[in-house]
Length: 251
Image (cartoon, rainbow, N blue to C red; front, side, top):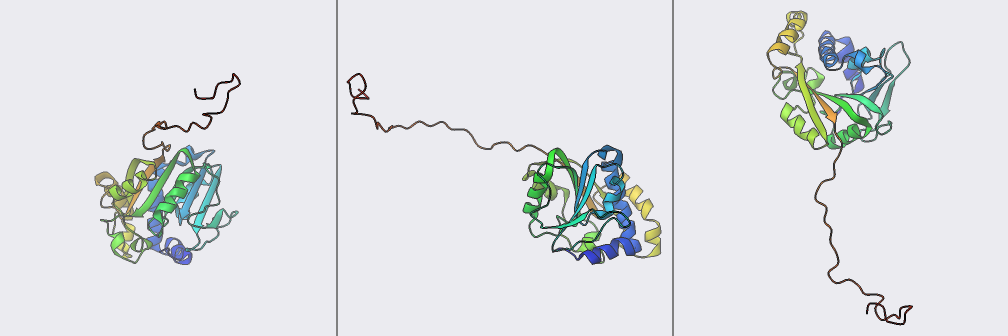
């Protein structure tokens, strides 16, 4: 079930814990996708991905923030022309193959139709398009407490996420994590969040509160085997009809 857009906005933009989470996840995405590499490309976020998209506004040809109807929409970015849009979960207002990079946050883990959402991801991405999925870590602390939006979504392991996307013709490229500190509003944990992110990235991705997994769109290939079959008893519909030479056809 999707959270309300106002709750998401208030968490990421009006609380210290939310701003810490926003910075940590965005920094990891920038490691995956340096903004300079998106020059001339179309970058799209689905769910509530706007906290991650600002670094791509300057370089990308086009940036779009899609927000599902059950969640609601808000204008973004502040002080600039709006680039966010409300859409149906399974019918995005984007042309097939028009997207180069797509990021999902609070989009896959909160939907009741994950397969259909991934089908739309596949449709809008161009050949070789890249998809990064941000989901609560099944073994992390952030999925176990409902003080943040990640406590409401469906948590995943890397293996579960890979298995689901393989069925939709995506290939796993790499994975990382963010939010290594606890989801605490205490000053000590907030002030030391940068240290925990640096240490966590060097040690293991399994302890992060959220998983960030990158996939590439692969081409669909026909499945099964081609079988040529001829009729064992063909219909002789012309048999008995005189041919131009005078003999019945089929003789």
